[in-house]
Every structure is written in structure tokens, then in C-alpha cells.
Length: 174
Image (cartoon, rainbow, N blue to C red; front, side, top):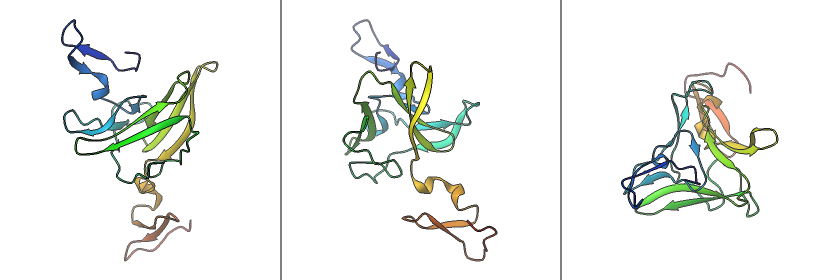
């Protein structure tokens, strides 16, 4: 399909979908693709690759979030009304999903969850024949568990400060 969704129909009338790639995503969200939980369909969870060179299933997941203020997701840059994409968040009894559309149809842009748990918006640069990062952000500041170290505790979200767990002392000053 023009959306990037590979669809197999049950018969020639194309009225019943037998299988579609949007139901089995990898690490990418394409425009108009719903990612998240739906009561009547499969859960479409975006999962990272193991590494840039290993396309196996990684450990990072993009799940639905209830921390949504209509302008941005937790950890995602503020997107004002003039931003290049519109992200929609739907939360009701039947689904909790996100989807996005690009305001300018001549721009080809994708959202990618990389192996470090960072959500990136990449835009195709035709003349350079490659992807350019438009923005990137952890899906949530607390998703970066390495920030405070193995025995650290994130105690101040607004300042993103760490402390040691009881019985541990810092080895390095940040």
C-alpha cells in the first residue's frame, strides 16, 4: 500500500485482510501506523534491534504511556503546532495507541526506536541519499537505567539527579 503497509487480502475483492505488516512492527513506526494496545487486534509493540549490526530482537520496547499532556510524550521534545509531524494519542476502553502524520506529504519521515531506547525521528534526504536525524529523545528519562549506575537511585526527576542506595558510596563525582 502507499502507506508502507504490506497487506495480504483473503480474496480478490480485497474486503478482508488476511495479514498486514502494520500488525507485526519491528523498530519503526511509519506514518498512519498505530502502535500500542487494541482490544480487537494484536498488540503492536515497537521493539528495538539488538544493535545496528544485529537485527535480532533487542531489549528496548516502546509501550503506551499515560503521561501525556496533549503536546508531548514523557521524554519527547515539546512539539508545538508548527512542528513537522502531528502525533495522536488515543486512550479509551478499546485502544491505547499512538500514531503520527507528517504535515507535508512530500517529506518522508519515520520514527525509530534504537537499541539504546532512544526514539528518533529520521527524515529522508534525497540529494544525500540517506537518513538525517531530526530529533531524538529517550522515551522517558527513567528509561536510561545506566544514568545512575548499577547501585544508583534517581531521586529528583526534575533535575535528573542520582543518589546512592543505602549502604553504597559514590565512586565518581558527576
